[in-house]
Amino acid sequence: MLFHHTNKKNSIVSAFLLGLWIGLYQPTIVSSACQVLNAEGIDVTADMTHTVAVEGSNTDLTSTTNPTVIVQCFGSYSCMNFTMNDCPIIECEGSEACYFANFYSVTESVTCKESHSCHRTHVVFFQDDNNKMNQQQDVSSSSNKKQGFFGGRKSGNGLSTTASSVESNNPPTVSQQTIMRCHGRMACDVAFVHGVDILDCQGVKGCRKIDATAQTVICHDGDHEDQACMDLASFMTPCLHCQTDIGCSPYINQCRYQFPPEYLSKDSDPEQWLECDPEAGDMEKYCTADQLVLIQSYREKYETKIIEEELWKQEKGNNDEGNGGRH
Image 1 (cartoon, helix red, strand yellow):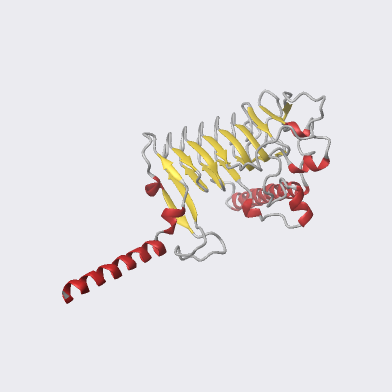
Image 2 (cartoon, helix red, strand yellow; image 1 turned 90 degrees about the horizontal axis):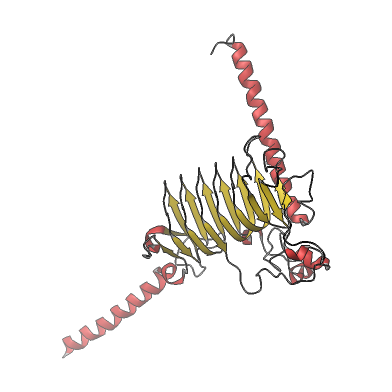
C-alpha cells in the first residue's frame, strides 16, 4: 500500500512539473497566430518560422513579452504559392522567392530581395476596425487630410496620425510603422500590396507593374533607362517620392498615382490618374512633416552614394594613370 501511495504521489508531482515546463518553455508555440500553408494547403508553420525577442524584451524566450515570429523564404522559388496569415515579419530572398504567394494581415514588414522576388505576390497588411480606409470622410477638414486614407493609422513616423495622438503629443514609435521593401531588379513585379505605411521600391524596375495602396511610396535607385517604378506601376497614396531621373518613369502610361478619395475635393474626379513626374505634379503636397523628414533621409542617402561613386571614379582614374593607362 505504501509503495502504491508513493507512486501515485510521484505521478502527481511529475504531472505538475510537466505542466510547468510546458507553460514556461513553449509560449511561442501557443501564443503565435502566424500560420504558413504550403502550395498543397499543408500547415508548415513549424518548419518555416523562427522566433526572436523583440527589442527591449528579454532574449530568453520564456519571457512573458511576446516574441516576434519571422518567416524566411530563402532560395529560388522558395515559398511558391504559399499562403501566410497573421505573420509579423516575412522575408523573401532569392530569384522568384515567394512567387504567387498570398500574405494576409501582415503586422510588421515584408522584405523582397533579389531578382523577381515577390513576383505576383498578394500582400495585405493588418487593418483593425478603427484603421480601415474611410472613403466617406469630409475632405475639407485639414485634420482629415493629416489622418491619411487609412482614417488614422498608427503613426510612428508621423505618416498618419489620429487626432488623439496629436493632442496627446505622444505618437507611437517608429517601430510601429509597417513597411514593404522591394529591393532588387524587378522585385515585386506585378505584385498587389494593400494597406502598408511605407512602400520602398529600390532598383531597376523594383516595383514594375505593381498595384499598391500605401501611406508613403518611395521609388529610387533605378537607372535612366529603367527606373524603379515603371511599366504601369500604380499607386494610391497621399505621399509619393521619386528620386530624380531614376526613381519613376515620368510617363503616365508607365508610372501613375492617385490621391486617396478623402484628399480630393467634392468636384474632383476620383478616377483620375496623375503621372509620376515631380515637375508636372504635386506628389508630395499632402506629405506630413514627418513624411518629409523620411524623404529627406533618402535624399541624403542618394547624395552620399553619388559622392562615394565620384570618389571611386577618381581613385580608379588615378590608379589607371599611375599604371600608365594599362589594364
